[in-house]
Image: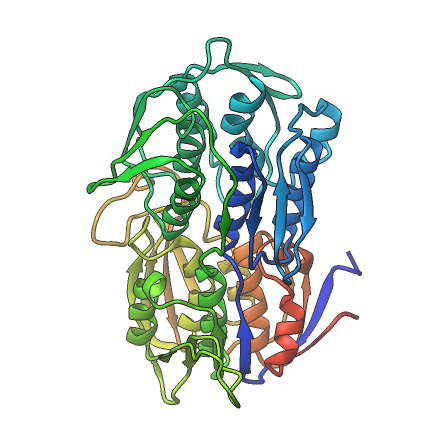
Length: 451
């Protein structure tokens, strides 16, 4: 692991400007959607992250020709020769991403069969794929579980259905959308996820020729069509990465402008950021004209000085406070005066990273009780899913081992905010969701290097 470590010299405020590209939680799904088209698709602003490499490899295995476009960050997908891939080939990617499960619907439409290996992803809870499999069965797919993975077929084709999710799962909603658009008849999905990335995926599918209605009360209706064509799309920017850099600015008492960040998709985060005592300014885009190169819009985040204030928050599905926002923000909350309370309601095992923060001098207690306004799915089960953060705490350097993607960035923020030199192991995991983060750290004046 010696080549997968970053030496971080903490105590320096982050200052400067960075840019975020297309959302990790949208781009990979947009790439899968290209399978459904009968003509090439074009996707812009694709970040250079590990998840994109995985999906690009999986598409290639299934006969989709993926090439770089003329613009930096542009990918072109030609699905003219979609084909099946061998078990051994697909298993090369097993354990590296949870994206393969979303190939099911498109492959069943294109080939009539699909194979899905064991799934990987971050270890933040079981995240079972039962919702996915149940939905596929409702459409008419048969699922054969074998030791090497899942073999699916649709001997009678796929047909629209009425389906209600027991929980508004983002992944299961994506599964239904990618399957319903070419299923015969009408599909009605109740209790659907409505995150901005879901709406952007619907925009892509609509561009391809799909007929999708988003009703109130989390109801999505899809009228199946016999064929779809390619799309051209520029995805929404990554609101998770934007919030992560905002939290880093707050924790290090710095000032970071995040070009590309959009206010509308970050409203809930911005409210909490201001409640804690952080300041931000939305900067509008300026079109280029003679003598002026123009400028991309974004959001400037900074610590205004003085003490930060404690808050109480609960994570929730959109439009609630995003679960991926809580880990970076908690590092900043260690510097707030008083007791902050975080109630995690989306993933049951997402507070394990706090042990590392405590080893650096933070004072965080985790509890099995629901420390929030309403009980959640984990309240009567044996999961420590609530945290109380007492601050302010003086953080000191430590050796840290990254357990998962978002916790990894939180460890990195803690190392940047702490006094002394920390060694952060497993930093390559951060490349799954944060493009070129080491170069961005350098642009912001951080003192960090590979040994």
